[in-house]
Figure 1: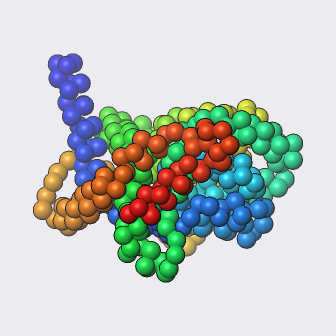
Figure 2 (figure 1 turned 90 degrees about the vertical axis):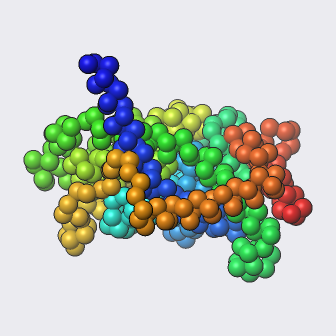
Length: 404
């Protein structure tokens, strides 16, 4: 009986994970394809020049560049260090990091599909708010001495994760945006960026789905309702944003892989603002905190943990009460956390269509040297003496595109 019970529990967890995967598959492919298109026409080479200080203009540019960048949290953290080492303002680099994980199109699509358009709107409202709060905190608390400590540590070039992915520039130039997208070089760039996005975060998505499936199958609703104090609505509004980032920190799930888990938490009773702060917190999960320690040193990593946490909580609280005031918080908790079931409906049709699109892009990637590019994703690009960070990847990509 115990063996049978364990086996049944595993089947239930995998069934929920499989069901959620089937529901969001087409949206994942669409999101990564759109992200790849944007990355194929937006160059990383100008980022340092465009982020010289922490002025409102620089922070707005950082948000735009982040939204057009990779959704991989590890790549965002690595690229933020890269542009900081090349002279970008530290606050602007951190604003870019926030935007690249919280203002990307694939996150909005998944939130809309699994949880509702209100959560998508909340993310795109809360993300800029978090940047504003972070800028205020940094201006008051970030001393020149701390910035110098961060710069000295960053110059050591200690290895983190996905550094090759962060510094590869697959964009093409010349002509109009449409001509770049539709050209042979543009098609190759899109296919390579699409493959890199999947290679960078498929583990986070898989882990997120498995954790969400396990929690949906094994943890009773009564536990979540007690943990999120749903019997005390006013307390719950404050408690959710406070505890959301803490749950994210220990879940180890980042990038858009935390959306399935957010759906489980929402159905379990966490507040609307708690969902927002939970999703924002992919930048303070324990593995990324360790990378901050390597990149910027212990003192600065603790500073980032404290200020990021405060801004995540503040953004979650403000979104909670603002959306509540205008009646935008859903009255029902019916996020899509479903068991595996494949039926002939619009989801199946969309999955077939977008799987064909994915196959086309993968074939193009393989036929144009993409396998070698994927092997370089985890390797730092500045190991050769005299190389600037990212030069190798940029030259490699540009050579491929010209050859194509």
